[in-house]
Length: 372
Image 1 (cartoon, rainbow, N blue to C red):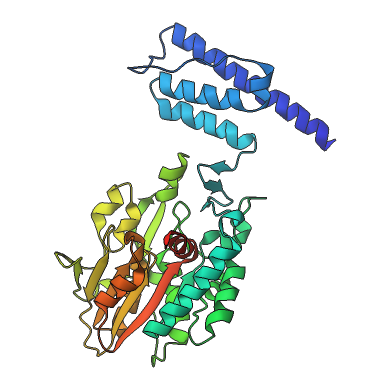
Image 2: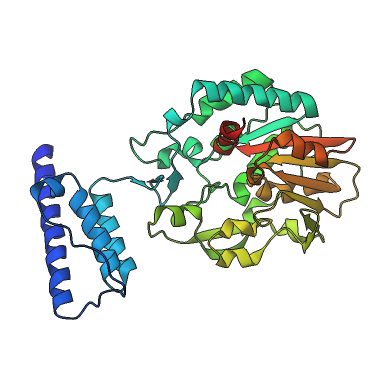
């Protein structure tokens, strides 16, 4: 019965596609749709082969998008048909459930050799700087109930268990366990690869448990401030799929003190947040900006401790939460640095500085891949 229904659905889908093609051409010939200027698309030829292997849908979608005004509307129709037909991967972005999208991390891209090198390098960094390590799993490892069905993905949880065994409990910070305990909450953005301020807060609590600090700073998760309801992150741009906008929130407590931030030694700013990025194609830059190698944050807290965070831009959200414990926080953004991370960290070290390695799992492994 199910097989018969699938055949009927497929025939109906083909009929809709052919009718869409026919209506498009009729409207064009009648002058109701105007071709784009500098139009250079060639109309694909219909055949049974191109229809069944999917080439016809793809080529005709591109043809329509290039030819007519309001190309985004036609492109969205084409993408909707692709989704109905079972496609889940759009330029390395998976369509998940409950409005979530996930960046593609294929298991075959993370070889045993890469894993071994990454574990060795963590041992080197932690021994050299007496550092603790907080590697953040991305959404597909935590939001398992929202993941696309049958979408292959690298097992980040298994990798993090290897990190724990290699480094030991005193050095390894179990952010994965803390995030999984709160997996029903909005700890990641739906349309972006990063964690939210709420997710970073749970990462902060995981960090505190083994930090030796007397008390954590308790942020009120019930009174988070909504900065915008128009956030649409990096996965929207990467995939080309129309996505619903979502909320971006922060903790009002992080704005109570005057904060000075100096980028790369030359560019001063006030506060942790950069509102102009919300109107750009990199809205996650709202959290401490983008593109810098080193950001030096003078927190305004009269403490003796100084913290250096080395890793990627997942640290941008968490740094304001750590501020009450330190008079200065230095972010060393190794994602923007193509050389050996040790060189950059060494330049920013001072006596008595605590070091935290804070990296998302995929970004850390990609950085090891690039090391010579």
